[in-house]
Amino acid sequence: MNFLKETGIIPPPITDYFIKESLLILFFGVALIIIFCKTINNNFPELSIRKLIKKEMNDWEKKFYKKLLWQYPLWGLFQQFFMILIFLFIRKFVSDFNAILITSAFFVLLHYPNLFLGLLVFGLEQMFLNHFLIFRNLYALAVFHGVFATLLLFLSPSVLYTKFYILSDYIKLYKNDKDNGDKQWVLVTADKVKNLIEDKFLKDFDEK
Image (cartoon, rainbow, N blue to C red; front, side, top):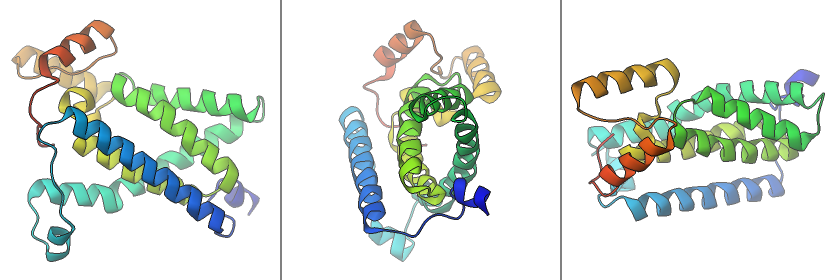
């Protein structure tokens, strides 16, 4: 029972403070992502709640809502549970502050060599773990993960998000596309990132 409570599987009772803080994170997180993506993406898609209700959606929108409403939150639940276990282990040896930094850095390694994604998750995981320390609610982290990951995946330009592939799959895609001359994928080298942004930064939105 202590393990379930410590990992947030059985969270404390929901309070007004928890609701306000969680909604604040969602509001500012979503706002920043939309402003960022809208600023650098000329063909930003317009999603319609009316289409969602009437089921008048194209394939792009169907994929978007599927990711947003259950796929990414479910994946985030397992992912954040794993990160919480690592955090709880590390904090036995160091302060909470250092444990958060170390766990977040480890989370970046899991997303190597996707530079854009790595930078994002380093900051997001720190926010998630600080929220967890206060409220001990695993499910809130799953919701945060689902919302932020879906928006970043579908709304950020392809030159930055690169389909969020990581590790071996990412490298295979890079090698295949390099041989075919079709696309380039962002690796960790700064010069390649600079060249890619210069070449593709202002191009139209590619449907995910």
